[in-house]
Amino acid sequence: MDTDLDLPATERTPAVELRSAEGLLSIHGCSIPENADRFYSPIQDRIEAYALHPRSKTMLRVALSYFNSSSSKYLLDLMKRLEDLHGSGRSQVTMEWQYTRGDLDMKEAGEDYKALVEFPVKVKEVD
Image (cartoon, rainbow, N blue to C red; front, side, top):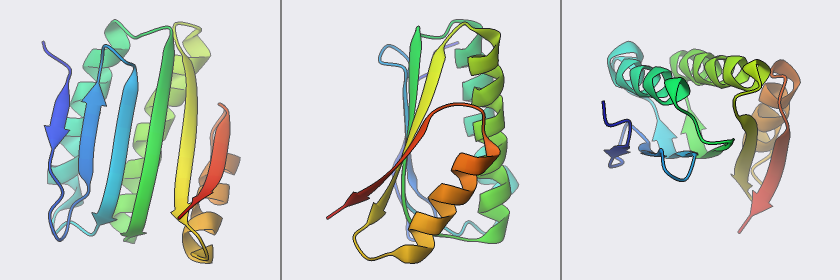
C-alpha cells in the first residue's frame, strides 16, 4: 500500500501530508471536522501502514491555528501510535509543534502534548 497522503486543507480540516520516503507527517491549519473519526481514521490507517516499513527517522510537524476537543483526542492517538513506533526502536520519532507568535493557547497545547509522549518534542514559535 502506498502510504503517502496529501489531504488539502478545508475551512474545517487541516492539510495533512505524509511523505513516507522523507519520514514526514505534517498537519497544519484548523481542525474542527464535523466528524473527527471519519477525518482522522484514514490518517491513522496510513500511519499504521507506514509503521510497517518506517524511515530510520520520523518527523511529525504540527502547525494548527485551532483544534476542537474531538480533534485533540485523535491527535493524541496519532502521537501515541508514533510513540509505539519510537519505542520499538525502528524509527527515531520527533515532533515539532509550531505555534504563531503570541498564540499562547497553541503554545500551551504543544507543551501539554509534549508531556504526554515519550519522544522528543520541540515547541517552536513561528511568525
